[in-house]
Image 1 (cartoon, rainbow, N blue to C red):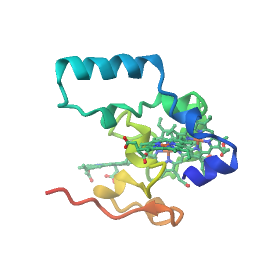
Image 2 (cartoon, helix red, strand yellow):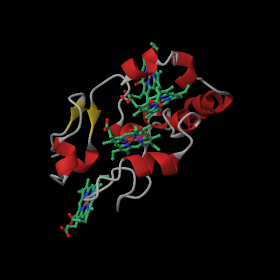
Image 3 (tube, rainbow, N blue to C red):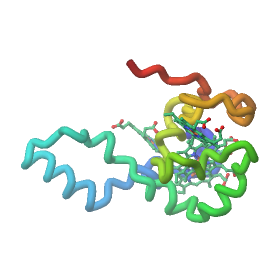
Image 4 (cartoon, rainbow, N blue to C red):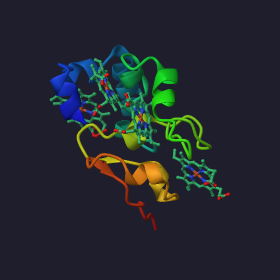
Amino acid sequence: MSHAHAQANVNCIDCHENGIEDKIQETVWYVTDDFDDPPYKRAFPNEMCTKCHSDIDAIVAKTDFGEANPHNSHLGDLVCSDCHKMHNQSHAKCADCHNFEFLQNLPADWDKEAKKTK
Ligand code: HEC
Ligand code: HEC
Ligand code: HEC
Ligand code: HEC
């Protein structure tokens, strides 16, 4: 996935901005010693993606596979990086519970195995 972005000249800092909010948040974690929800989980908000991919309606329309739509489902609003991994194989989260045809037809850089969590 980072490959598609590199080809489009999207650089590390276009995504990893380390904005002022992150700095404040880091301080809060440091001061409160509260790591219940660790930084790496919070550091990748959807704004990281939607500042460029702002037309969500268009994305939803493009992935309407009839049987189901990964961008519009009963799971509600999801975090982009739940599925789109930038530096690892992307994971089709819906496959954890479903076996939709569109999942089988995803490009090879998608992991479509159900993640078994015990
Ligand atoms: C700085 C702007 C920018 C940011 C930030 C950005 N993208 Fe992209 N993205 C692009 C461009 C440009 C392309 C290539 C042209 C296109 O397909 O629209 C692209 C392509 C894609 C594609 C299609 C890849 C393919 O193989 O066809 C996906 C999926 C995607 N981005 C998801 C994301 C996700 C998820 C994030 C957040 C983690 C993100 N992007 C952040 C600019 C950005
Ligand atoms: C439940 C998993 C899932 C989540 C969550 C998710 N996506 Fe996707 N996304 C997909 C799948 C599956 C595709 C289709 C991949 C393909 O055909 O290459 C896709 C395709 C895309 C594309 C390419 C559309 C195209 O064909 O031009 C973009 C851009 C994109 N997603 C952005 C996002 C953004 C931004 C978010 C967060 C707001 C997000 N996605 C959340 C699964 C997901
Ligand atoms: C399109 C947006 C995007 C681009 C471009 C991008 N990253 Fe990332 N990066 C992410 C996201 C989202 C994650 C969260 C984990 C994942 O999705 O793989 C991440 C995770 C990371 C991590 C792990 C951080 C952690 O705490 O887990 C490092 C290190 C990293 N990126 C470095 C880089 C470097 C270096 C570049 C440039 C070569 C780069 N990234 C380009 C979106 C991006
Ligand atoms: C944790 C498990 C789980 C995940 C993950 C999940 N679903 Fe479901 N989904 C269900 C259950 C349970 C039902 C209801 C079962 C039924 O009636 O067949 C359902 C029903 C549906 C239906 C109604 C049609 C049908 O086949 O019954 C659609 C469409 C659907 N899910 C799409 C999605 C999409 C798209 C995703 C990924 C964004 C997703 N689901 C992720 C558990 C899940």
